[in-house]
Image (tube, rainbow, N blue to C red; front, top):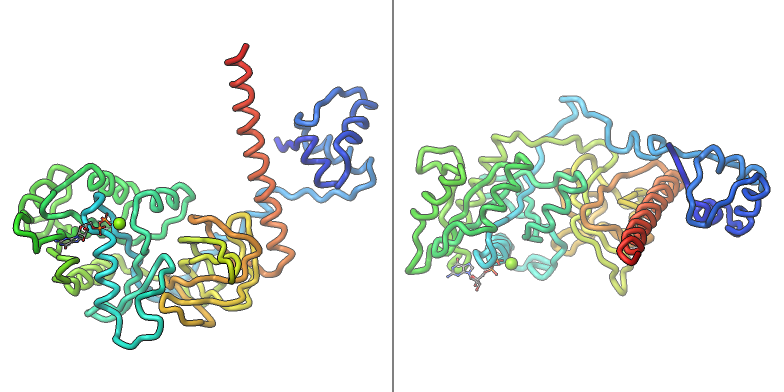
Length: 370
Ligand code: GDP
Ligand code: MG
């Protein structure tokens, strides 16, 4: 059943908690400020204090935000979204940088200096590929925990001079749990002590069977340092993407996921958003987690202002009233009133969860002390 704490009820009515408690006492109920009462009692109290009550249920707020299905005719191919994972020091960052550098057309505005948490390159086979530029299992896990599926393909980097290590195995397990296909990039093949064959056989133990050993997992030997075979890796990604037949409807209101977010001194809250369905436009009203805003500007990974971003496109979104969190799902809503309703509700949920948590901690501390 729905409940509310005395404190929260008082806050929402802009009344003093003590007046609420007094009223309940008159009715013969002894309560403390931290006690919770059920929604019906709360409504009666509020009305008695002269307030109009509008009860908002979770379903009013959350339903219809993400669940409109698209028809087959509306679906259009979209670029794959790729995350690079692997053991520490096996070359995730180096590979992301190398791919990005190799793909920059000389003289391109902004060039390689812009870091927004994700970037796009052009595949040698044509079409775009989107890389999430925040390697690390933490980001992947955080997003999955919030039900956000952002990655279509995981590139598993394994250093040829080091072989399969604990975080390699972790990455394999993540990808498997998320049902995302792997492409193996055997890195550092420029090193004299590189043993790519050993990597292939070690992977067998974890049921990753690469093509050259008769399996169906694509593999590429690369060197981020010497920039070897980066094109081959991009080709493998495009081939894998074709198998996955990735599509989205670009002609609808946008939905996406916050990849990174920060409070920028000059620009205010800045969120890098990966658009996943629909097209995001400047001027749209968006909600992400418990925050909302009107999109003031969209900036691409080259630092250029754009007016719209379609499926699989990463963009910086300016205009949030406050900073959302990485992993928050973004949706466009019809107007600011709706945005406020949703985010007020979520802020409240957040506060109530936090209060419940600290009450539990207090409770167990008291138990420990007694
Ligand atoms: P991460 O922890 O997986 O992001 O790994 P880094 O990209 O930071 O790389 C770890 C170290 O390996 C750095 O010193 C890199 O210069 C080096 N490294 C990365 N790729 C290669 C490569 O292809 N060949 C060689 N020889 N060294 C590499
Ligand atoms: Mg790194």
